[in-house]
Length: 297
Ligand SMILES: [Zn+2]
Ligand SMILES: [Zn+2]
Image (cartoon, rainbow, N blue to C red; front, side):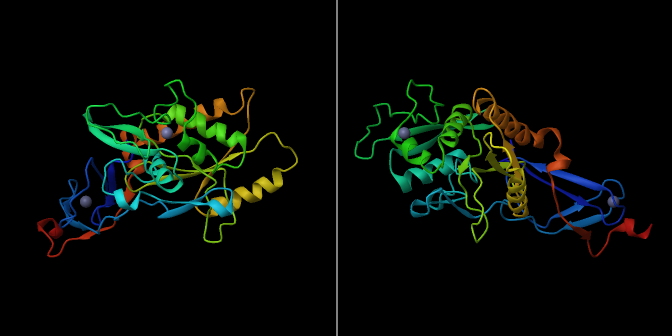
């Protein structure tokens, strides 16, 4: 599923064969010693990276006077298993604590077929909830399926967007993402230290625990004659490591584009299952000393 796939590969320094390892839980670093099945050489790999390759923190919002600072995971909840880097839960939790509205609270329910299942609640700040009364579910994480298209938190959060088209895009996105463990669409993310560029949305899709695909989503509207400016903008953004996805509205607005984007994300996140080699990070290995018998050949 991407977030919880620890995958790496290493080349045997003796025979040149590449080997891939894949784990569903954090590998215990230990000695990192391995034996090549082809040439029987004993090797030692260098350490594995500590963190995923995402920015530690970003500022979001089109209005400089009311920016939202988001960390890849909420600092005070970073050990919770829903607090995945720039996931919808990590993002909405921080937005809720910073901007007010409803008090968003995710809760771990258990596991189904190896996947952890969560419930998402939207509490009213001054209400006491007793254990025997059901708590209100968050409308955003219910994908707007409870007959309401808004809530106080959504009102605040959507104001990070600059245009109505962006708000609508984000609204549809929550509708598709629902209570899945999914990457957040981060509105008006300020990129680079000088913050000169601000794509409509940034998106960090986990291919594996360490390896993320960085997307910058641009809603380009129907304007013409600005292609040159757009190209320059896209180049500047891609220098920072983002793949720029420029979208133009179809007859139904951006609805179909949101759908395609969600499918693309799902495809990326599934890649760990279908093509481990592609998503593995590369780790160096050296022959272990003292060497074993096969060195005599
Ligand atoms: Zn070998
Ligand atoms: Zn709410």
